[in-house]
Image (cartoon, rainbow, N blue to C red; front, side, top):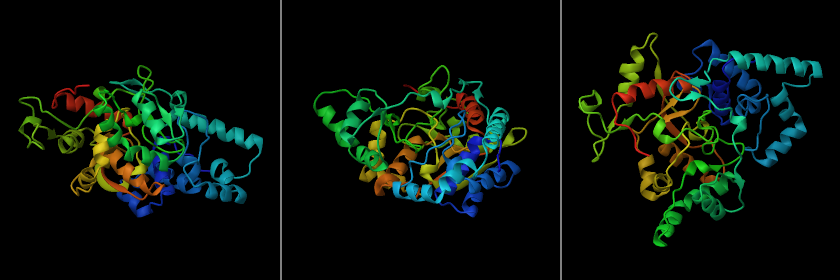
Length: 360
């Protein structure tokens, strides 16, 4: 049974495998050119459901609720689910030995659990659960109150997103001031929307958006970013290429960046806030046209976390949910060959000297 050390990267590769990505497409994303990602790929092919849904910092267990119920039942009857999760029929002693190996590997896994800028990462198994809701309207009302909600299916999540714009407009007409954070929507067994976002001991519900890096914004006067062309009427600039091609590429050793297309649903949010108004725009007719911009790209870490471009990703996921399943809508990414906690530190260090601090 193959057991790689980098569990986050293995989870991401397995998500791609479950989503139907070919070996060639996974290679184009920047994997499979080193020993560890090849081990992850072999492990993912051996037990795809297990690795795609493994809970980091928890015992080796998972959930495949994102699959159709009929398929899950068929897999259970064939014994495939047991094999996918446990590696086949083994004795109690064998299962215990595998668990010990898993725990030992977990201790030495490559992806760091602490950021010098953000602090120690909070164990995701301790994240609080959401309020279970039965209708999209109920979900939106709970989110407007600031509550985390759990929706039963991706179809209901899509319906809630499609009603988001009208919900905000109606509240404004009634004189209500509401703040919608789409990260408050979750669907068990999926990445939706921010269930695996970066949380720390200081911020167990997710690191606030203002403390996360951004690769676009208002440049600091006299900085290198200040010499760059503006991308909108507000004077914002895009420092993504400056960060990857000048900063990361000149580190010792240099950090590689590759461009590829991946299923939007295979990625995970790092921040814990998605502005409802912005996501509602992305779900509108004009916003959908914006999503089709062939030049648009978002930045991700090697373990599948978004660094910058969360709202575009949310819009793509919203489109993906329309048919009641995920995995068939792609998004262009630039993959930075660093685990998420390291790349967050690097991006925060770099942006601090180039971009004006964000407001809440």
